[in-house]
Length: 399
Figure (cartoon, rainbow, N blue to C red):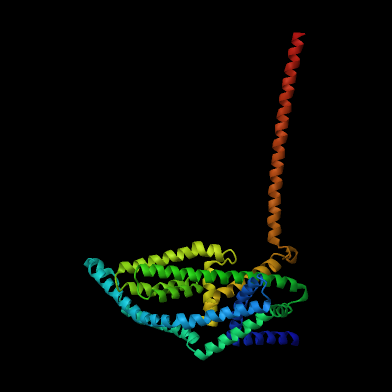
């Protein structure tokens, strides 16, 4: 390697190191992009009513700030009290489950009881405690630092307003990072990203509302305490597919165990029904038309982004995956792999041998068919000659 190659390698490694150090900042910028894309769609919708762009942006940003303020000042305080009660009640429900299991075990025959393992939930919980502590610490680090949360929110808000004020300039600046012959294609890819991201935001907001409402109705019918807090929790955890659905069902089931195992089973049935409605009705008609993600890919992406960015990466795993999917589909698959010419590869001996063998087999089949046709023709000609000679002999006898 010459000096230029070493300098290029060092530059790449230094860039990767710098990006790794500022990954949380990049995640905040991406959050601002997601919010700006959503508010930009709202601003364009307002412009249809002959509202000028600056006023439409001001209305969109004001509605966003009003929504956040309403959530933290009106909804969060009563929910915080209910969540405190939830933390106290859930361990009682787990202890009740342990008592029910012991009663069920005592009713079994002695031979079957001796073969069953001695499982005590109170002993299992301490073993799982380090895992829960790590999750709680990650979530606490995300929401616990009030000053850090305020600065992050302020940065996201400022970036969002700047992007909304002049989105074309930021878009053109990003496009200029690519070669001139590819900039028009990048512009089309950004349009696809905007459509996919906007569809996901609208679909996710609708899904959160529907799931929270259905959870509240179901828990209220069963008369489960703290139904509103658990319904809001189920709606918010919709942002984390698969993982969020599993976590949201644990608190109401634990509380229902304080009353009866049947009520806990009914809670599980209601949540399964809600998830089926989301998977088979809401997602196919609202999100799958804009974005198509395989369940395994979604789960792998959640684990991947959570390991790199922590709890905030888990929350934003789905929009990050959507953007990556659009770029891989348009750039890697359509522009590179689909246009890859076969002439770029030298012919391989195995392929040539296989082709020659196939050609020989085809030629042999053609020769055999030609021989069969020739035999049939010769048989037909001989039969016609015999018939002609018989006709000639009959005519001579008549004469």
